[in-house]
Length: 213
Image: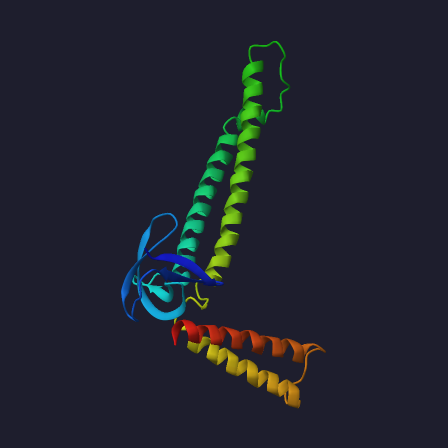
């Protein structure tokens, strides 16, 4: 049985009991029993008869598509919460004409029960309206985050190799410019941060080569 195994942040590889070749199609099973078809890329590890392969979904589903689905769901939940908020708000105004008169509750009068019920319902529905409106805002805030993730390229994608190579080249040139003075330092740590970025991108490039080259 082939299962998923985390290789590094954002990247899951296939852990297989049998050896495969680049380009093979294999079935990988999730811990919940769902099976997905994948294309085999590189052998990234081997130990005690267990093979680890970099893989991509045969249907093209990746982290960008996952982010897109998240956005659609969150916006849908936001729309639903807005509708519930509007509905509760309208319900809170059901007895508005009566309550707007500002008449005191007539204790012992036949209208007392109706009056108290109208006040309670108005308050409860207004509270629900506010709660649903808050939820709608929270869903949309989360959707904005996932919208940004829709365009993100990470190590789980084969195209990341060229992407990180370009970024590394730009980072090296920037670091070089800071060192020779052709680029002005913004603060005393500019050179340190630039070098750190070069190291991080070099590490990503090295990992991308293992996974996808």
